[in-house]
Length: 274
Image 1 (spheres, rainbow, N blue to C red):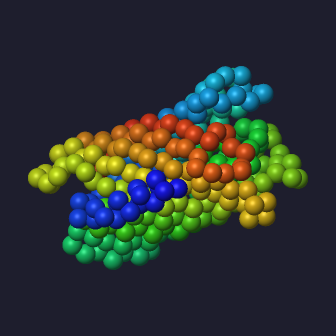
Image 2 (image 1 turned 90 degrees about the vertical axis):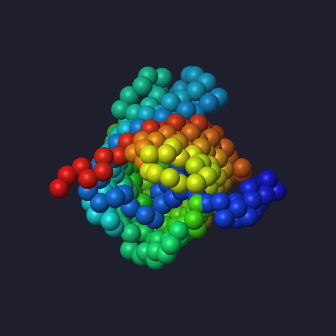
């Protein structure tokens, strides 16, 4: 925990250096540019995992995603999930959607504070095996929440808090004792370390992040908290590459794994339509 406190304090001490408001494991309160379309592909690798139903040492999930900036305040995502996480062969798992509305913005020179609400839903055909509710491929259900993001020159901070509700999966029913309700929360910080001085938007950007991601079930007292350091490269302000390592700091919740590596590719089409 001392290491965690040191990382947070170090980020606060470098406020004069700055950051990007594009987090790797969470969404910021800002929406996509209006009339833009984004394509995102997330690769998740869960190492050194072995369950009775999955006879291997690693599991892989692929999540293609289409994003639409409806206006400066509204954005929608459409997700697709496929993996070998619940069986030995790779298969399509389901679909999901995410919608966000930015309802507050206070902008100043080199800083802003924004807030948004979001909702998400998933429809998945996997067996229900874990206590963690994961709408990203493991569970059908819905979620709502709120996001608050502060940008200070090159440093950005963001908090997310939400509620998740699991439902029956396609072909698989929730047992009476299985978890149906959870809270999710996160605290994120990012720093734009390169370029040191902006000259034009075509300059490559290198961003460093640390995010703390958690879930809790108040009725069973089961919870976990992860730390997720990450690097992000942005090219020509349109192409984005994220590399994330997520590891559990503590927890007593049965999950698909307590660590993972994620590699994400994203490309944005600005002014995609009139």
